[in-house]
Image 1 (cartoon, rainbow, N blue to C red):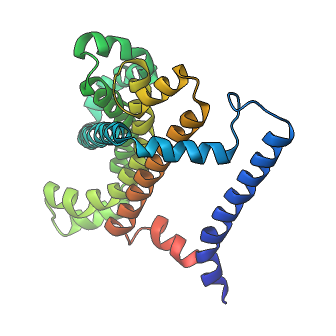
Image 2: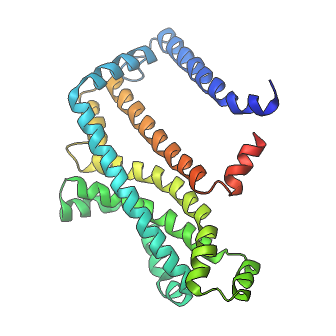
Image 3: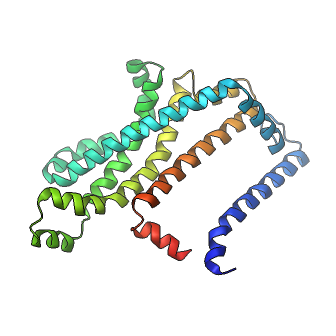
Length: 264
């Protein structure tokens, strides 16, 4: 087996192997030290709890609600981030005018706004979508702003030399230059959208996986609590790798994609 092939398949071997070792060590340690399942249940109890949790029809309803909120919030935040980032990148005077406001909004802990959103929009999905969108907005906007400003000067000169219009320059040069930055922002944004949605469900919700975490905690059902966390981690991983796969499809020409393939 050559080195490229080995590097490609290695994560598929080492990751499951390390997880199995972790679970075995965890199981043996917890039982050897006689740790209470209320504090740290062994993996066997957690997987048993996972089966029970997934066996309840209401769990799938909570999963559906959480996924919908994440996707809507992430999509809205990404769209707004791209639009605002492009506008600010193209209009330096506007960017200079609103920069203090943007910085002030960025540093506000968004979790602290959840009670306000609950007062304004209630305990429904709107509050969680807004929080997810807000958290997704800033990394995308800042990356797009950087992308618009990072267009190579020489490439701009080439476009000017062929008398390209501003729209043609934007379409054929700036968008292409901006796309890697958009995906860099999206990879951060999807993680933050998941966190924002779950925290919103913790603090003000009666449905979703965040609410399910609170309910299992109140029931002191530690195995079910770990099981819900496993479901959340799985959803987050699937969404992250979906965005990452989309990047490989949309910008296969960028070094962040082909460079990795070549190194593999």
